[in-house]
Image 1 (cartoon, rainbow, N blue to C red):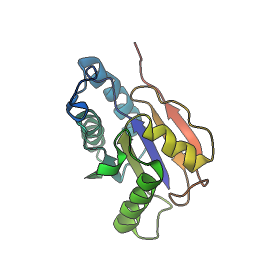
Image 2 (image 1 turned 90 degrees about the horizontal axis):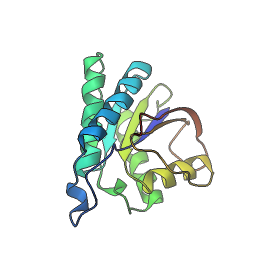
Image 3 (image 1 turned 30 degrees about the horizontal axis):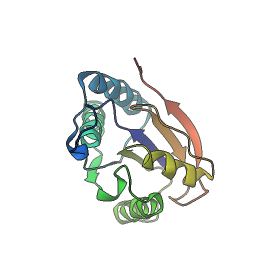
Image 4 (image 1 turned 45 degrees about the vertical axis):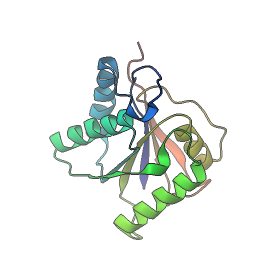
Length: 164
């Protein structure tokens, strides 16, 4: 199974309503680059997104690119992958969603998870048994693993869009 972890694109400045922050125009361009790359190189079966605006917008751009290229991934919003959530709970929730959706046959499945720093770095670090490494805006890391579980993943590919 491939799991693609994506950080949202550039968002409006921090404010009291962190969940309501939207992507900037530049952030949308970053996400377009990432979405185009992913949709061209990977057959997406499922996109899981944080409900925060900037992650939801990022995921919907990815969904649109995938559909433009003839893919038909399902889309799910997951409350436990917001910035300060517990990464172990998030991994368990992702595993539950994947198992419910696909059962035991995960070999050819490809799932994109769109969320935020620091949780995205923490989840990837736990899945690979490495120290957390920061994600650039709209960065995608493609991990290969038999199941979503700690220590079983290896990074297969990375895409980083324009950062300036």
